[in-house]
Each structure stands twice: as structure tokens, then as C-alpha cells.
Image 1 (cartoon, rainbow, N blue to C red):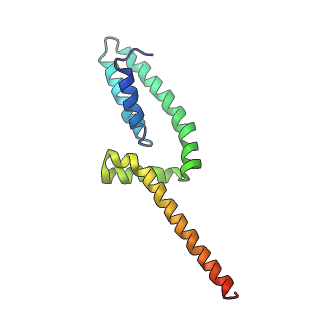
Image 2 (tube, one colour):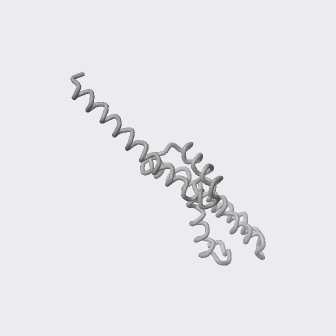
Image 3 (cartoon, one colour):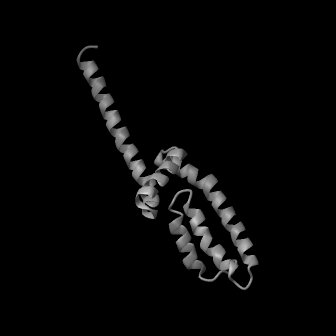
Length: 129
């Protein structure tokens, strides 16, 4: 579209890096901008930056919050914390698996919490309270 070489490869790389919430889009945007800067027409870097900003703003402000809040059920601060925490422990792989791991942990905690509350309620009913 803008004329950057290897656009499909860069798009795939950006898509994979976009799996890292909040930070991945920035990592994925560096490569095409650098390629545009070393191209014969460095003005393409400006167009690339504008394109990346528009796409990422739409994704970050409309699409991602809806998916994370409705599907994963995690507060955005917890999402950022899990990315940073698992990223510090396991590097880039940790940044990718951080949100699913935290979502799984929360699901387990909620399950056992609800199960213990049900046992308390059943015990109160059977004891005649």
C-alpha cells in the first residue's frame, strides 16, 4: 500500500507481536518504520507512522477493550500487570502467555471460591440456621 518491501512478512511479524497486549504493537511498528527510513523515499516513514498510529488506535481503543472485558473478564490494569509480570519472568513468551495464564488463574480462583461459598451455604441449610 505504501510501498515498503516485504510487506507480507512485516505484516505477519506485526500480527504475531500484536499478541503481546499494549506493548506488541509498538514492537511490531518499529520494523516497517526503519525499513521506510532506509528506503529511497524516507517520507514513506511518515506515512508508515501515521498508518500504524491509526490502525493501533482503532484496535487499542475499540476492539481490544471490548474483547478483554467481555471475553476474558479482566480489568485492564490486571492485563497490564500480567503482561509485565510474566514478561519479567519469561521474556517475550511470558508477555504472550501472561493474559491467558492470568485469566486461567482467575477462572480457577472464581471456581473454588464459588464452590466454597456453596459448601458454606449448604452447611448452613443442613444445620438449620
